[in-house]
Image (cartoon, rainbow, N blue to C red; front, side, top):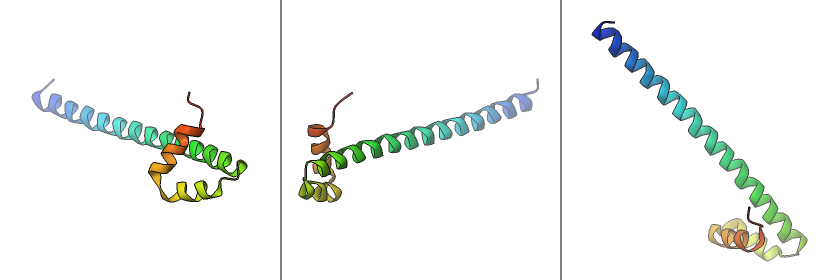
Length: 77
């Protein structure tokens, strides 16, 4: 009920909010990585089955080309 108590409580709540935000951010990053890996695996599988090994090799070194192939070959949700 004192000014110091209110200040301490606000500081504690700010710390808690930062912790929650950081954990949520990390969870979203990890989920995005997992989804991205699934897409890359699907693309690689399509390219291998089609015998497009030159495209597969190029996609591993050229991110823009990989994105182009993903847009071209992967079904969209």
